[in-house]
Image (cartoon, rainbow, N blue to C red; front, side, top):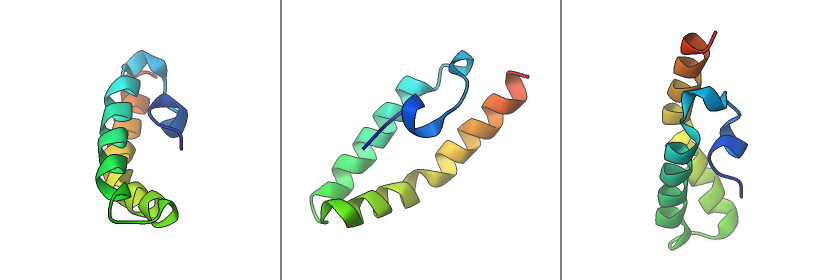
Length: 64
């Protein structure tokens, strides 16, 4: 599993990589316990999609 900048592919100029990595790790840890790794991955993606999409959109607007 990849986290942060590696997972979300946005400009490093936005400085979001560490924040996204921490949120990704916490979300993944929260869903790993009750699920198998495969279903945990799907659940984690679903929970993080909105936040990462918003960060990516903001980054595109501010770093043009």
